[in-house]
Image (cartoon, rainbow, N blue to C red; front, side, top):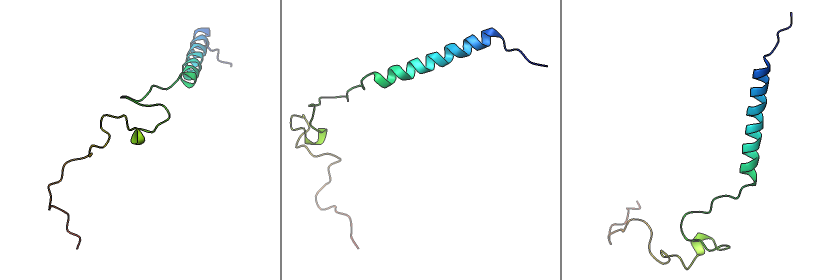
Length: 71
């Protein structure tokens, strides 16, 4: 005995598959979002001298004379 599949189930599955293919195709061809903050095209952020933080130390300040013991 052969079981029949409802036409509504087949149509729903086709719509879902077309939706997935369309969405992932659209995401594949859309340009990526630019990174947050100022960025000069062609210059990596760590070499960008126009950055407001250029030349400033990064990380937490360390008081003088508090180096870690080496041995």
